[in-house]
Image (cartoon, rainbow, N blue to C red; front, side):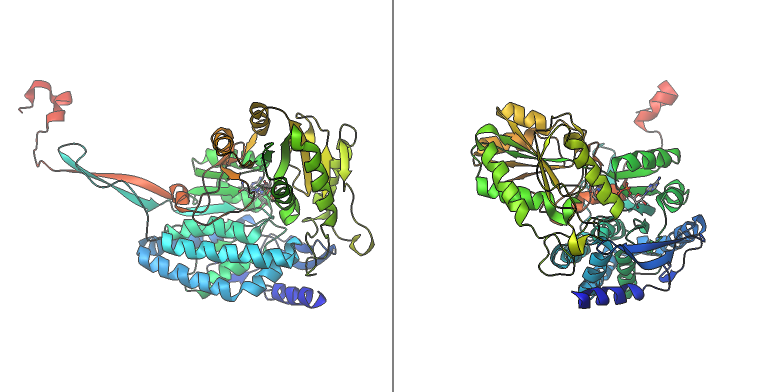
Length: 511
Ligand code: NAD
């Protein structure tokens, strides 16, 4: 365990030159203000760095603009080759990426190693292939007198802003479709978690992706983030984060008429019908609620269980919650690590403490003591008896907290599932194909799982409905965000006085 933490600190040390990655090299930020990556398992500052200023953002945008013509002009095959090399470079750096991700996020090493890093390598390989398959309508003579076709062109320089919960995967989801389609990018990771975004950009350079195609600025949301969103040299903003910040980003982006892609918060329902496999549903709820210590925008947060299964489901989940090992991220026995920060842990604890006045905390509801007391840890927490309109049912807690509520009719269960402002993901648990079909049609969310909750795949889109945002990450659908479609129309008649000119010339046009 200590060996892994020491190795992770050594990986971070290799980024000591600076936390801004501009035009293919690291440099310090010029804001004059310092920030530090904090290991949430210990509370210790492990990687101090200089925050980006507006000037650093300008330099990154300038580098991206300079690189744009060359990269946009490369053939799809050339971009694809570069992305294949990028996937290989990430694969070679897999161990270091997993160590750094666990250090800065407090993620169990088994999660970084088994999920975050391989998911990122697979995503990169997917976009290497997808770069050669941009789709569009077939050219044709839709007007009898013209040939029409579409060109799918890059948007330009993309400014992307990412959250701290899956920093490496979020960097990948933002950067890969953008550059596969011929854009260049400036990515601003969350200031808590810059390490793996910088390593990702370095791997791009090592793979031969030209300088300036992928740039990273590490600064605060207010200073570097807003400057990037407002920047006149940036054609598009792609944001993943909370709905509250997303609204602010939308306001700023709108002022410069930018294309906007928003991946926002979630409050995923988990609907268990009375014919479900109880063992599968209980295990699915525990894994779906606790993955990444519950800091997952698609995590199962509200389980609605049809009355005949309700008591047994609550008992099974409570028992499983108590078996989950909360511990040091570098300990192989650990199931869930700390939350991202003490601030986030206290925020989660605040939701639970307030809930005690109107609901029942069945298990959890406290931070572990002993060796873990100095970290941002919190025990898996199960809450029952909360009203549908209460804060724990409606608000995004973003921690290891699951609320369970009963329902009677199928109509009621589906209505409750839809009754929050969010619509990112949901699941339905049943052995009845018609119930499953109805749930997938009627739940308003960007993803509905049947008899599972959480898995994602590079080939399929991820994105929200309602207050969870709009636009898609991953899959070929993401090219809709990162390309613009141009209609080109050729006259085929070679006639000087065209028939439609009669709208202007009236009777002077001779057929
Ligand atoms: P956050 O909204 O606080 O911050 C996200 C990013 O925005 C950070 O990089 C931050 O520095 C930046 N930012 C903050 N203020 C800004 C401003 N005024 N202008 C520009 N940028 C600004 O979110 P977080 O706490 O880092 O992450 C958790 C949130 O992210 C949760 O709500 C979660 O649901 C959401 N999330 C959504 C998805 C998805 O795919 N929909 C995926 C992961 C996380």
